[in-house]
Amino acid sequence: MRQPLIAGNWKMNGSKASAKELLAGVVAGAAEIRSSEIAVCPPFPFLQMAQEALSGSQVRLGAQNVSTEESGAFTGEVSAAMLADFGCQYVICGHSERRSLYGEGDAMIARKLAAANAKGIKPILCVGETLEDREGGNTESVIASQLDGVIAVGGIEIMGVIEIAYEPVWAIGTGKTATPEQAQDVHAFIRGRLAEQSASIAEGIRILYGGSMKASNAAELLVQPDIDGGLIGGASLVADDFLAIARAGDASVA
Image (cartoon, rainbow, N blue to C red):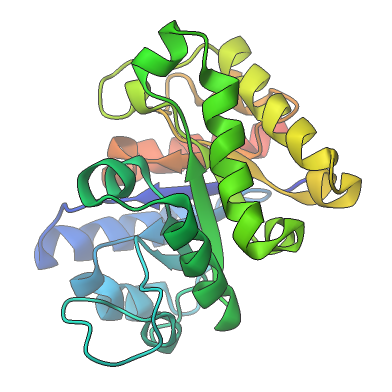
């Protein structure tokens, strides 16, 4: 059985004071979590604070983005080596906001996966469709293209060293959520698509749901057979809500 992963994506939110309070709340509550793995991905300026706050706890540290490059004249970029220096064990790659707002394509995202993996950081690859894609019946073709674009660069082997987060773009920050059945169907499609090239990789990979999972709907999503956790946005900014999702992850494997 795959261990649930509950990862919080803080996006560009927080202050030093609020981040400190949130980290303390998550660390305190995480002591009660027995089965779920927990990670938080704060903005870059809070990584050192987070590293110190999470020291000695079971909560893992992640980042929200990484450069394709190792070092050099790349103003504003942050390398995988730098993230590793701060103890990051996860990094989000290919989030829909990075794709749509900053023009990141599959080839670039594949290079980010490779850069992170080379420094021992596990990437969380985000894939998902827009509302237009879904209403046009193109969900599977869009996601297949996103997966194939990464595999074309990194080979199927890259899928053996990452996590995947399915994030329906139409459900991010909108309050809308895919039904458990809709989410499960896409998760099963992703696993099946990978199984065409490697059954063992498909069976082992964790596929998280990343579309407005919250305390009120986490349980019904996490009991689905192919949903292995959540990439949590807004709910990760409130310690009690985030921890409630982690408890739902515990219950899903009880």
